[in-house]
Image (cartoon, rainbow, N blue to C red; front, side, top):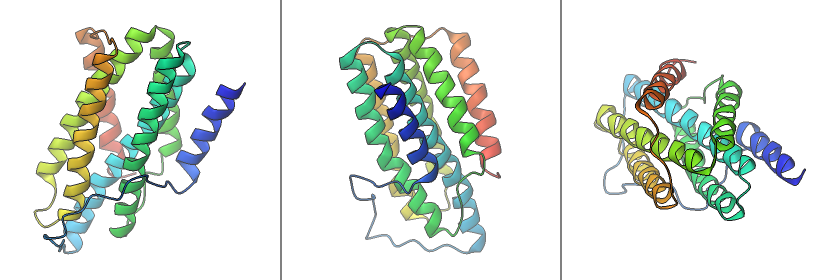
Length: 205
């Protein structure tokens, strides 16, 4: 019952409360951001997608912590979820600075990611960890592509995304070290396809 209550609390805080970061938002103080209206809209669209990714990260890790019977692994997932809260807060803050909003479909994204995390967890700890590895590797590549697509003058967003990319790849390595199994290629391809749908829709809605 406590685990279910914690999962419900995490969902409500992710979707309806203002996230609070444990660490200061990354910045590049020597490179001030200067954007025109069109560039601000372009940055906001990318940052909206990244915020959705962090909503999904909260759901995935919460579900995987709920599904595992291994106390040490549950603590691992919970710690990773807490670290991802920084990313959630940073992307929300940056969206506000860009005078934009999060995706209107965040409850749907959360529910879908929670279901995937729960399924991965029910398939066993090694599969669950393998799902983390592949997810974080794909997210890291996605963040790198956004770093290359940001308007040149958006140093504020660039600092955030660079730190997020490094953190995601560190999470992937931690899951690998914890005993992850490699997922079969068809599963990886399905994950990429689902992510493509999410990122395409979230840019606009």
